[in-house]
Structures are given as C-alpha cells and as structure tokens.
Image 1 (cartoon, helix red, strand yellow):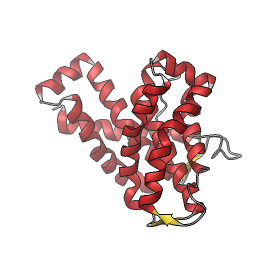
Image 2 (cartoon, rainbow, N blue to C red):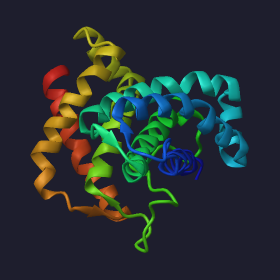
Image 3 (cartoon, rainbow, N blue to C red):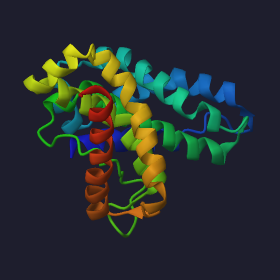
Length: 229
C-alpha cells in the first residue's frame, strides 16, 4: 500500500499544480516544477502515516528526502523532455504534471524504499486514486511501459547481483552493477518493440502480471544471450 501511496501522492500533487494562470514556456514550467517538487512531495510523504513509516525504516528524514528528489526529477525530466510541448497551459500542466509526478514517485520508491517495503515492488503497481477507473487497477499500455522502463533496470540488476552463480559469471564477463544498469534499458526497448503490437491498450491487474512475466522473460533471455554466455 505504501508504494502506491508514494506514487499516488507524487502524481496527484503535480497534476493539480498548474504553476501559472496563463500559458508559459516549457523551460519556465520545468524550472517552476523543479523548484517545487522536493519540498512539496517530501512534506506530503512525511505527513502520510504509511509513507512516513516507510521513510523512517529507511532512515530518510524530511531533509534527506528533499536532497534525494532532485535525482529522480532529473531522470524523469530527461525521459519526457522531448515529448513536452513548447508551451504549457493549465490543461497541459495537469497532464504532464501527472506523468512526471508519477515517474518521480516510482523512481524515488525504487531507489530509496524498495528494500524496506514489506509489500515489495510490483513492477507496474503504479495506479493512483487520482487515475483509478471503475475498472479498478487498470492502466494504459503507455503508462505500464513507462513504469517498466523506470523500475526494471534496478530490480533486475539487483536480482542478478544477489545470485552468487550469476554474479560470478557477470564478474567474469566484466559486467559491473553500473554496466548492468546501463545495459537493461536498451534490452527493454528491444523487447517492447518486439511485443508492443501484442500488448493490450489497457491492462488490468491480471494482464499486468501476465505481461510482466512475458516481457520479463524476453529481457532475461536477451540479457543472458549477450552477457552470460
């Protein structure tokens, strides 16, 4: 539950922040968003009992949280920069605030709280109260793939490194944790391209689990073929 709370808080906060009452440039919007994100997100995380408990277990205070958010922000800004319109109006601010806020929440949780969460990190458990539909846990294919791209590298590489036999093989092939993290996104992109036409446009929890396994096998096979022979 805490994982969804964190992602949900982030997405909802920034979906409702227009930053201006008139149309502004993309750069102006990003600057305002960047200035607002750390304090706004961390204050709300600390004020939520469930997420604050998770932060405490990870020894993350409000002040430390504020120093951690910019790294997630930079990653998500880079991910969406080419897709952002040059001019941001109130409607666009809500749409892109939700997307980037969701991205920040997923990345922050994955990098800082996954190790202390009892519920684990279902790769694509990113639905929020703000975006939930009558169909419950459904999410669009685009959102599911976005979440996969953000979360998968760290989770996959940590799993590989924690396996003694695989870690030994990786080391023999000169594959460090850093190289693993940098190699996974290209493999994900290849698997996404291969399977994209087969993935339904909307995925409920059952289909998310199904496609987690399918695309996970594709990623694992491709990684093994390239780095574990």
